[in-house]
Image 1 (cartoon, rainbow, N blue to C red):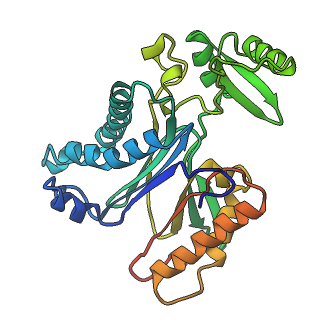
Image 2: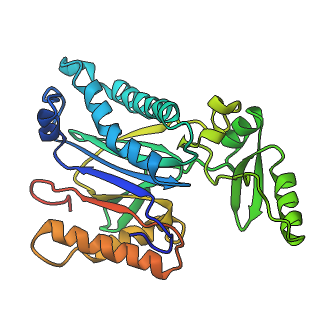
Image 3: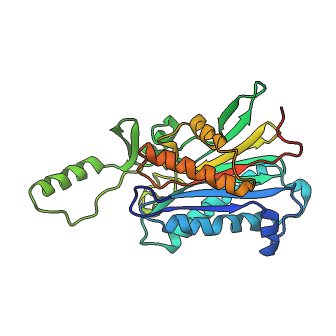
Length: 313
């Protein structure tokens, strides 16, 4: 959903049967534990070009790696996690090299299912929330990601060591900027107040400390304030896991994880077609985020797990 933004800059990819897609692309992954599935959300900023570039390339580059070695025992957690990291960094390098005048960037969150293992890779503030049923039949929302925000101590330290600054905009909002940002903004406001206008390039401050793209914040322009290295997490799925949701921050900025899971689970009764039920649930969630005042694009992927015999009771 475009929401209140003038343009839709989010992109997403859904491949419920990654093994079938891999065969069609002549990059078979039958040697991996089955089933295999791939889901991803790319939240673009300052434009859509980077989000679209990454959305088109991520799963293809990942399949090239996963299909390269057909030794079943070769693909442990560390190697799959490494492949996800390599793809992120490679796509960032390629985008910066190909689109030399494009200032935009994107966050990403990827969920890769291999057998009963769920790999989550993320850069920036897009999230994955896993819904689990407790022994007391309560629904638990488990966050599988942690936003890469500049107010985190380790992230702020890295930004400062690279020559950048972290600014407090109030209301819990922190942004990454180049040194001298505040002075430039004061000068712009002064000139505008005098009716002089401003012919130069207005400086940018970003709310994430990691992203793909964002040329002006990368080492190719002199200072690498942002990096494209993801964090990767692997969890073992079991029958207590009901569903997961991948989302951009347009939703998570106005809703808590447990509220998101509650909204999606509330929509479980409905049409017999599970795809239609998921679509209805996603529509209800983005509408709720919109009603709560979200000013961003709104994107969610809802993935319900089907276990033989149903959920564990």
